[in-house]
Length: 287
Image (cartoon, rainbow, N blue to C red; front, side):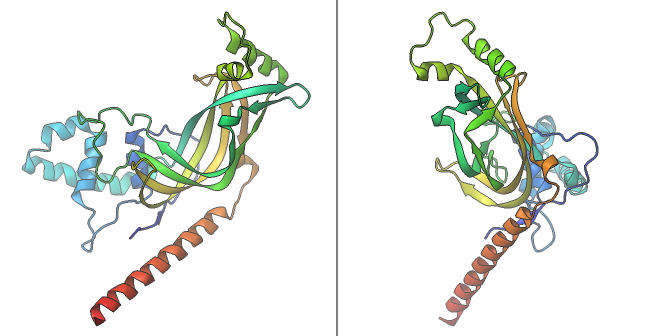
């Protein structure tokens, strides 16, 4: 049975920072979203504390985890630290997705996104950790870490569509010339030209609710979360130096009822699941 929880966001102070989705940062997000629930004695399972230290404090874990006398004190200190500091862990992340651009229209001053890369009304995104294939604390990357999936299944507050990109002509011209730099043979087919025009969509996302653990189509374990798309940027290079377009939903729209609607919908669904489970238990008892 899934246990839904919502993050209590602190008032913003200073510039907003969007973290990269690394395994370490995701582990902190799970605490920020109160993913881990206490048992009937009010205590969160030790394994989730231990694995947080395994991810975030490798040297400490390697030195003391085999010594029960030392480790019990370290674990309890970590438990207290997490409870006191989880509200300060990151909720905002940026997710980068590669694109390819097609023709630039001088009249409308827009690039077409090449057809295979167009995004049309998508609300659900799989966001995998950038270091998914790297070993963690000498543990091979292929092994899972209990309680800490290495990716997210994010449901956005709004459908996202990206078919064209508004770009000023002078920036578009610089971008096109840059993509042709070093190309000795002019592409004759459009597909060859478009394949040279790499670009990078950077989505600015705030997560606000943990839902449950799910599996992707490839059977990879993911954490299902609800999220708000606060804006996005499109760059003409992987180093994010050439900005082609940006949009900030956060500035444009101060308040939205979408989060409350999503919360209500999931709460109703989970309530029905709970009622169904109770009826099943009562039926078994009567038999």
